Image (cartoon, rainbow, N blue to C red; front, side, top):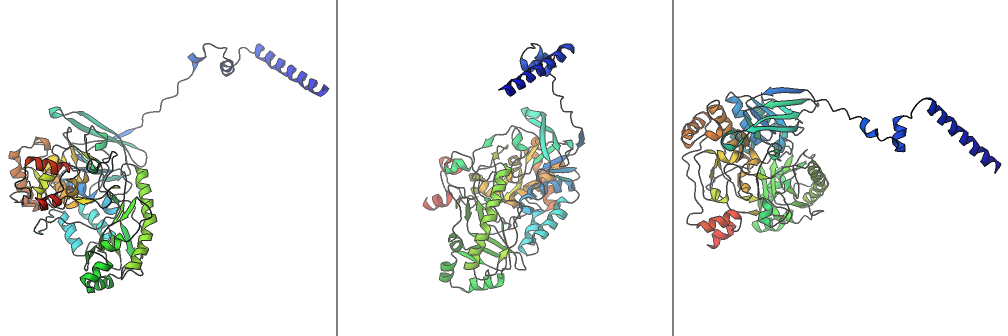
Length: 530
């Protein structure tokens, strides 16, 4: 007890000594009086945080800025450069080439008309001819083509961040994009001004920041409330495949034997298509992935790459969503390999040949352009006075989570694609390249195919060079087009006029066409029942 009182007395003496020092040396520091609540003026002397200094911004200008390095828009860049314009490519992705090089989507879909005639034109024809001939099959060969035929001499800055899209009022009540403020991978800030800006990413990195009108997507067609895009693909890469044994075995079977073992399909020296009976027998490990019929290409030397593996509910604008999908693929593809080894002759010793760094993204948001292509334009074989491409391909809607197989909505003969479907509505200098083409979600099933939009991009690049300093793209009138089309045909062998297409909607009523465009009529079923 005495010890406790002694300690208490010592503590009292210590406090008294501290108070004496405070009285002798003036008022207590602000921090102490604030804590006691005894200083009514404490708020008045709080220091404001020092504002961050504005970063130095390096200024530059050019004729055309292309956002993204997807193959389709690079045809525009190449053509404009060859026509004498200055072009700069700013790529938000860390590596160039997008779907083609990073996603390794190396199975090329050709476009043909209803009679089987090849529709591929322009610079893309060299790529497709090389692919068909077996000369461009491996990633290294596609990379050489991309670097030497498309990107050579064009500045490309990868890994940039778009910080601000700067605009001003333009002509006819529209807006003009004046410049883009961006940050390089090294952290430096830059602003670039240009006459035209091209959206060439697979997730609308630039256009999505503008005042855009999103068109209804596949959710409207499939009756979903939430937005969902066509399934993404992850390319499957294999090695040590005995393709000759595979082909010889497959073609040595009777039709009944082939159907029993593999289902419908065909195999030749270069491709294996279908075999959907065999793929349907595979049971995925989870509901977000699916193995459909094969689009397989023999890359030579025992290497094979296949477009057949689908991943659902992927948002390409969400980096985490893409990463999760890639991990799903890395977990599932080894299981698919085991299925192939057990069920395909010639694949007994097949092994994984690595994984692509990225996905094959089929679809993102559809934004309104000056003209939005419809199903009836395609099946009706419509041609436009401002054609920049001649398209063709089935209206192929790849599946989503509620309809895993997808659906085909009809097969056009061929059709025109107008410049207006590549010009963003309400902006007078924004061009939508590649997957950003203006089309309904159903028409997009055909419009999206590479040769269609690659030719359009090349034509637009040439036209930009021809009208430089004379007119803007949106100022072109019908009377300007004969000369532009003649130049494209004479110098680049791109034929866009005097083309007759089969109208598969002849005799249809306006109401039938409305229902077709809205997805209420599925053409293959309806046309057979009429």
